[in-house]
Image (cartoon, rainbow, N blue to C red; front, side, top):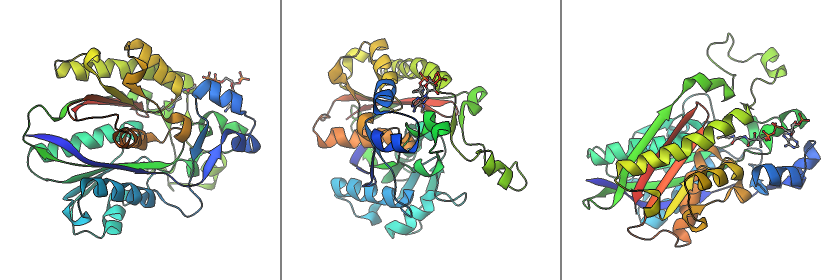
Length: 330
Ligand code: COA
């Protein structure tokens, strides 16, 4: 038995923030941001709008495509590095918002690789027969955790808010569905892209001193992240395809984590992929962390760029460092 996709959906806040808008908050420019990252605009929440609300909107669209009622979901796997609260995780808030029974809700904290890791858990549950219909969500609100001044500009021009959701279930067809995963971590680089505080190693977990030092903001060594991302994602795509006995020549579409258009372009060159074999939408959404892949997936499905039988690869790299890929025969 394999796991196939039954429905996809996404949602972003309706507040659009352009590069020119950012130039009014900090010393940056549309030209710098476009040249270095490819990003033109992104969506940020309005005050009071939450990650779970975005996840709920994305979930409703995925369920509608799958022609399923919320009550038919057997389990939730929710990937986010930006939960609405320290505890509990967002999974239970989504379970409550969906108005479903006491189904399990698991939170995954693997940042930009969150959707790939969440999908691998859902795939295991479906293939072992433990749950038949699993909702997999990747959703983030990054905008409330960034320093919106010149000091924080290397991070705050990149990251944004959004949610993607898929519903997966079993298929008897050996040649369809999720074929393989390739998952990795390397904690030696944990502090190269991280949020230090609040944390339970501190007494108290958050203090005025920490806040004044800005340790609650996402902190990144951009050059190091770039260097590892452009090596690890292609390596992982090759590995996951090899596990299925295929190569990049067989690939209909690569859906890569949208971290920086320059990273995606470099990866495309390394893997010798044609333009029609890759999909980029970072120009309009920025880096939405765990949400980038399911957002791109939903756009491609609705645009008819993915047809039955097509070989798709998904790949992600980010904070941890954590990275991984999935190969899917649609
Ligand atoms: N606007 C204008 N100038 C900026 C800027 C901004 N938003 N951000 C940084 N700069 C400045 C720096 O202050 C620096 O100025 P200086 O030379 O006077 O000191 C200069 O631009 C170069 O900074 P640097 O950090 O070396 O730039 P870079 O070429 O490495 O590009 C990133 C920065 C963030 C675009 C790039 O490192 C990157 O994309 N890294 C990967 C990030 C990523 O993908 N993260 C998510 C992974 S999941």
